[in-house]
Image (cartoon, rainbow, N blue to C red; front, side):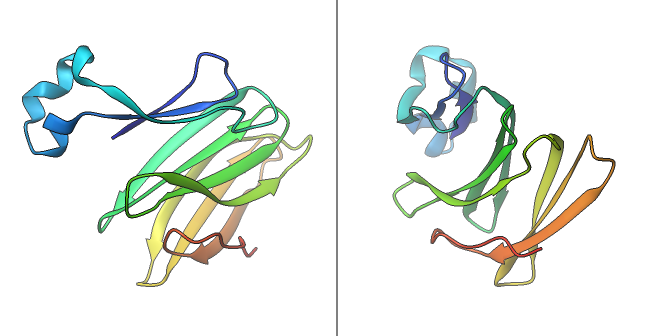
Length: 135
């Protein structure tokens, strides 16, 4: 699957290519083979300015941020649909980068940095259920 910002700049599109999912990586270049798997309209209150994906041990996540200072973490369910897992509000202290990684077998660690010249570290439970980010 691929994740992209939608044309309206507030939404997110998850793309799927059945042939690539079956292991035929040569089909990845064929744009006509990709179909919209999920379209999340108005995924953010403002224009998205950051999107990063993370895959580990069969789990898929992505992190998005918008110009209004909202960071959201999305997680894939078993069927490939993504749900909102957690969110943070940074307000005027806009962030410009993040990294999401496994922290042991049960948690994820999220590092966020940006214009406030600080690195913010959060943890959350792994999996597709909504979870609070802990500072």
